[in-house]
Length: 135
Image (cartoon, rainbow, N blue to C red; front, side, top):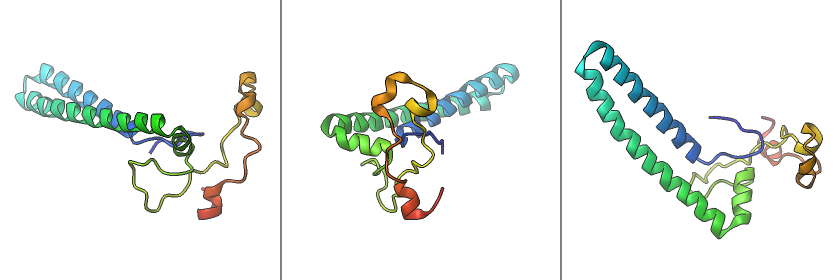
């Protein structure tokens, strides 16, 4: 799982990775076929191409779900992105809020002057640490 400071990734990101990795596998198998002429590589690449198409369709559906949430309930979208609650189309049981204790402030920690209105320094202590201990 990739860690990104400041946001809770939606599973669309995992599907993007899957599509990219499958696409790379198809290209590698094609290269092996070109070098060897072994049709087994070409046959497997053909089957993986179908998987790439299926993963892209799943990614489009997940992205659509995320956009619908953003349109219908922007405040909830922000809470989900911030890791305060799970994305509605992901597993709800056992959710623990995202650890925010190591987040950095764009304004104070990175000297981004335009980010003064987004200062995160005054936030309360990390809810995840309070619930489940330190990361």
